Length: 75
Image 1 (cartoon, rainbow, N blue to C red):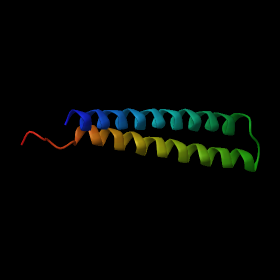
Image 2 (image 1 turned 90 degrees about the vertical axis):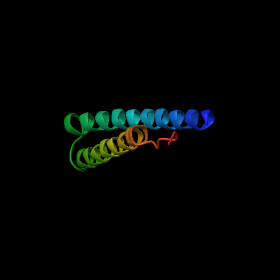
Image 3 (image 1 turned 180 degrees about the vertical axis):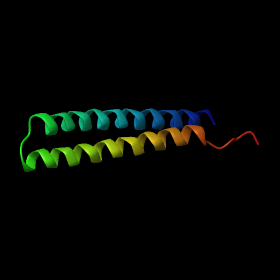
Image 4 (image 1 turned 30 degrees about the horizontal axis):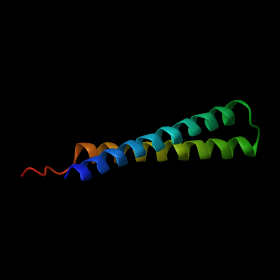
């Protein structure tokens, strides 16, 4: 049982790390797309940034849901 719990914690932390990386990359692309890029490149960067931010939110939600709604094994 302890090995399973350690696996669950490691998976949650890995998902949260990936969510943070995706959010950071998304924010950087969003800033570049809004301030520096011009024309079609700006729109592409903004769309990709928004997709990365949404993906980051979904990954964070999955990691949190796994923590909050984990089955009670004591029953």
